[in-house]
Amino acid sequence: MRCLAVCQNEIVIRMLNEALSGGYDLEFLVRAAAMARRLRSAGFAVSMGDPETTSLFLKADLTPGTAVIIEDDGHQRLIPIIEAAHNAGGTLIYVLGASGGSAAHRREQQLKKRFPEVSYLTPGELFGSALATEFSRSLTRLRVQQYRHYFHDAGRILILLHNDPDPDAMASGLALRTALRRTRATAKIGAFRGATRPENIRMQQMLDIHVEPVTTDTLGNYDRVAMVDVQPAYFGGKVGHVDLVIDHHPEQPGYRPVFKDVRTDYGSTCTILTEHLRAVDERISERTATAMLYAIKSDTLFFNRQANRVDIEAFSYLYPLADATLIRKMEGAEITPERLDFVVTARNNSHFSDQVFCAYLGAAPRDDVVPYVADFYLQLENVRWTVIGARVGDAITVSVRNLGYTRNAGEFVKQAFGGIGSAGGHRAMAKAVIPVAKYEATYGSLDPEAVTSRLEALVRHFLRNQPEKKAR
Ligand SMILES: [Mn+2]
View: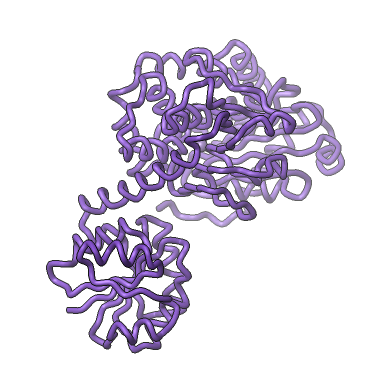
């Protein structure tokens, strides 16, 4: 059988050749003359030209019995290529994605709307699983080599973290520094605002992680800027140029880094960076491995939230390299006398009935005590919802936890507080921040008992009126 493959990436071309040359008469269509020359001299059958034109396919003798494989690398304009192949008489058209998982599924749905006859293949389907792992590792290796090369001649590098950096941000900073083969003198890990949560400060001290304070003025001192666990939009225009972005949060539009690796179906940024370091066989120090392991654990809430196969695989890779005792100590750092005080306050001010625990803590020094207390009372027998509020500065912070598999904490905060503050989250956890003046104007008194009653009334109203969704 004949097969025409429209690919611009040499690794993909070589992998396809490996996988298909036995049973297929394989020819590649490439855009770049240099690539065409190189492949021809290596013995490949190659046509060169613009794959968005029908003539290239006609020249390559496309018949209805020819299979056409089009690589979906995120850069090629897929639709015009499919149209050109189609217009040249192609009927067996396959699109080859770079990855599997939910992203591939969405892409397939999009394409099917427009071209119902086109099939979408993941590397796993085409190559079998062992070869597919090798294939995606090769792509990752190429990516790491490229950005490493790009950062190579920079005198000073900044690895920028989000404000109040958490374990994933700090560990990703260490991991990227390792990937770039830099030291703390030549690649600074920095943030506009340093860590404030006790367990994050403790991690910083125990692993000797220095987070350099950054201002818009000092940004200019760096030759290259990378971001981990965050994207430029977060900084609202404060960071003009960024060279590399590695993140697992939902992709935000409006920026063009030189290199980008955003994988939203990963549980942590450290999982992505574990794959980077593995792909180039870089040695990971015990300190960095310990930080990364702790980060994966804490970002996936000990694998209770959004962890998938890749996170578990990264975890097992790092485990023998890390110091497990140190991790246990860092985990213990969550409990502080201050937090215990707020747990007691919550106990004294709480309304608890029918599986719902509500409490207002009064004034708190930072907002991390609020989710801490919300998590704490979720451990109590018969508690399925916790709604905890506190005043932090000029705002009321509300944390919501939901242990049942029905109804959505995120929908609750949006309904109750979306109109007067910022509110969001997902099924199991959510948060709202409301300016004090707006809260008072809408819901009245800030007296602790009054706020607790109000929180309880709001959540009861929501739970009564929200149709029950069945657990999967
Ligand atoms: Mn993260």
